[in-house]
Length: 230
Image (cartoon, rainbow, N blue to C red):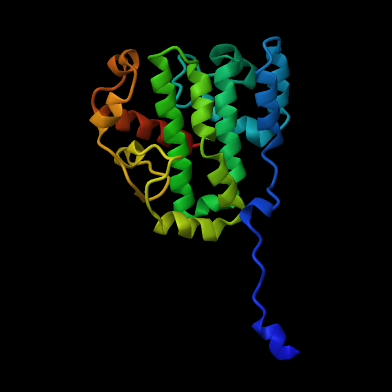
């Protein structure tokens, strides 16, 4: 009987069957409220301010070089009035994702994943600015585009970090250009050259987007530093 127990292998549940921790409640409620055209600014302010630590991070990012406000806001209500509900929504989601990742951010591979998402958000925002898509919605989509990986990082931190560190090849959910920018989701991500990616943009967006990789990479890096300094 004892030998049989020693030979038993632990049963590993598929990741899809694992119980995910909840996403920060304030961030979820902000998404819900901000999507309502009739939302009052004081409602958003009261919601965000209900979590002092969350509110502090939101206010610091809102005043950072990423948004470079002409007049720094002294309160959440002032920040919403200056930036607008849509922009504050993106800031709250940024804080929410970082909070959700929690201690997994101590893993180098997870910090790379975080920067990849943030870089995607900044690039998406810049792309939308040259087209007809709401740039703040594009930013939010960029932050959340790899939310499945973020969840795996939380429920299987060490195993998923190892996978990201060792896997090589292409992945349909990863923009290949991000490796050349310096913000890949994993080190082995295959990429194409910048001119090839520019060629895939519609004419209008291509004319208004960054013609040179270096300038785009500089702005993305500056945005990430602004958020990480919080």
